[in-house]
Length: 149
Image (tube, rainbow, N blue to C red; front, side):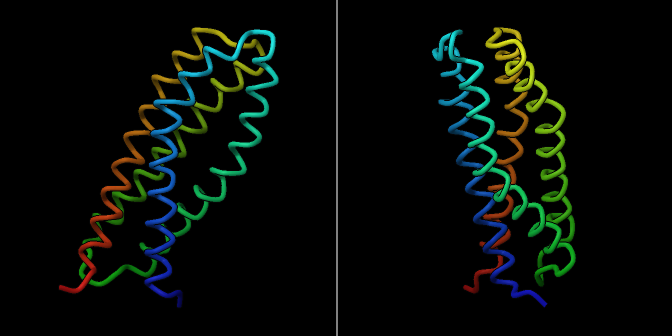
């Protein structure tokens, strides 16, 4: 069996890392897409996707697997509903990424910068921002509840 401390630590770390990253992306990075310039935007967005994947993919995988692990090996005195809520938020994040953000990035790779794709990307990314923020709060609260007084 996996160590509960390790499982909780991986889940908390990956969730908080992604929560911080998504706020940076939402408030700083995505809005700056407008300033790249049309002539270099296609190369920029391709590089952005490739490099971002190296950062977010491992964290998202660790978060998802550790969230499932917490369901499989639930911590004592933590309501199952909290763990299921965490899994639900992971689902929302992955669904939003796959069906909302990735297609908008793809549209900008194909056609270059467009206000339509950019505005939709920023607007729909609030879904992930809210979900990761909620996961960060929930996961932190779960760990807090497990700290002995």
